[in-house]
Image 1 (cartoon, rainbow, N blue to C red):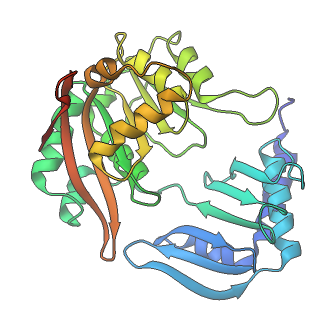
Image 2 (image 1 turned 60 degrees about the vertical axis):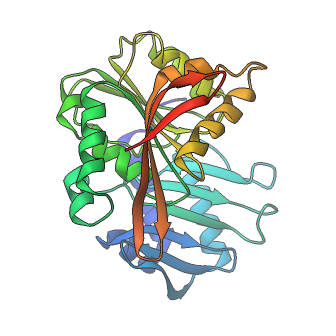
Amino acid sequence: MALTDPVTATRKSDALAQALGPAVASALAAADVVEVMVNADGRVWVERAGRGREDTGVVMSAADAERVLRLAADHAGEVVTHDQPLISATLPGGERFQGIYAPVAAGPCFVIRKRPSVIFTLEDFVTQGVMDACHAAALAAAVERRENILVAGGTGAGKTTLANALLALPAFADDRVIIIEDTAELQCSAMDQLALLTRRAAPVVTMADLVRTALRLRPDRIVIGEVRDGSALDMLKAWNTGHPGGVATLHANSAAEALDRLEDLIGEVSQRVPRRAIGQAIGLIAFLTRTSQGRALQSVLSVGGWSEVTGYRLTPI
């Protein structure tokens, strides 16, 4: 695909900003807004840090929402149609965009997740009451010891925010870090880093492709934005073959179930689930949850291997 010249890129960015309209633009500009949601009925919702979802009272027309989808798709080098109704993209400002077109939804709709302008540190998490000092110290020590860390939780629990806090630790600064994501959300303190993104449009580049490619890029640490498919097996192999100290996020219902989820993903591409290798590769699991008071680090488990008799050796911290 040919590179877009700066003038064309600017025009596309301006057209997208105009299509989003003043209500969405002001929400994206607000420091406390973390997500903007436009439903199929056109109603615009925002999520504010520490306050939850709010109805803005604004309704976007179906024509404007459809235009947003098409412009976001064009920015990503894709198209959105009835036959291709899903679009994932990174907007010009770095925001993550997920759009849905008919007939999957009753009308065009999308969610924009802002990229954090400020990286929260582990100290910030302690100050805000998201985690206690003991857990913060355990996570920092695990990064220093080059243990592989799974950050687990549900949607919107703060997995990416915690992963960014870990990547900001000094232990990452002197290493060569390869970051692999579907959309660019992670930020790392290392000067020597390489960020790779999957590609849905032809030619398709999958997460598994990038994990295998990362092994040839002389990594010290390999970081996965979100493990959601059979690439979990490739990640496991990479972490177990001389590239410790990685971080990955994963959807799960508890810290212990994060390993079950990992098994399920590996089972999509392999008849044999390498539980011993999982027990060797994963050093720590941090589980985040969303409560009515906000996000909280509910538990941290140390993984001490796997036994055919007792299963995974999990020790709460």
